[in-house]
Image (cartoon, rainbow, N blue to C red; front, side):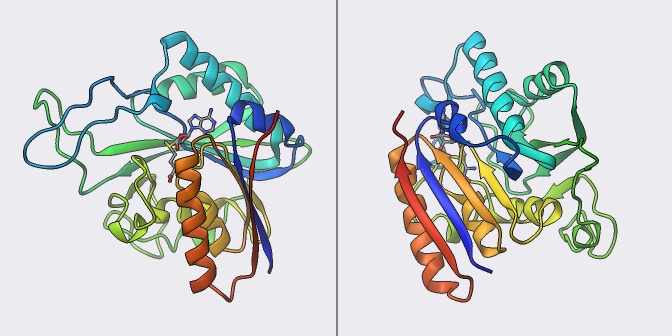
Length: 270
Ligand SMILES: C[S@@+](CC[C@H](N)C(=O)[O-])C[C@H]1O[C@@H](n2cnc3c(N)ncnc32)[C@H](O)[C@@H]1O
């Protein structure tokens, strides 16, 4: 099956407005978590420094407005029966859940998933427990007689140290941090592991479906969508990350020749 992949460089809040109502089957959003500090923390034992990205800094009010706005647009473009997944940490996930429940009463939260990272970074300040999880909300837009897709049989193929293959998969997934072999195209501070996206995409979509990622970063969602015969639309504001996506697609097209696809990149002009 030939699939299409569109990468649009621009601000999601503007780009999303040009996407038609009820046109995508799945949204995966890995938004800014608003966890960056002006000065990152580091220590002498590793090169790791805590987040200090400009795109991840908002005032309290700005952040609430931003989350409400992109969620509104994403629910508008989602088809009935489509799913929206959002990732987060304690910095943003409660607010995200609150916004969904308070302002979008027709949206159903199906699950929250805890992503356990067995090789998480240590806690530098030694004043807290070590954060070793991220949290994902899986919500669906039902109506018009349609309910969310869930490929139950396939979901039982998910396997990790906490989930034996062939059994019902629990909502705690053990997936290591993004391996180096997926980070060869350039540095992105929050690149997600392909395995995380693989589980979400295979569980909630079918071949030929369209997946939207409004904060696509280094392009993980688009690459996994392509490798599993799904179409994708990715939006990313930073050119340096779009360049990483270009490199990743070029390599995928060389190595996965059997999966035909059309990839396009463009800058958003308002
Ligand atoms: C948490 S990262 C996503 C990482 C991605 N999941 C990956 O695997 O690489 C969030 C991304 O959103 C981008 N971003 C932030 N604000 C944006 C906006 N208003 N519109 C589009 N992209 C934005 C950032 O540049 C960053 O790359």
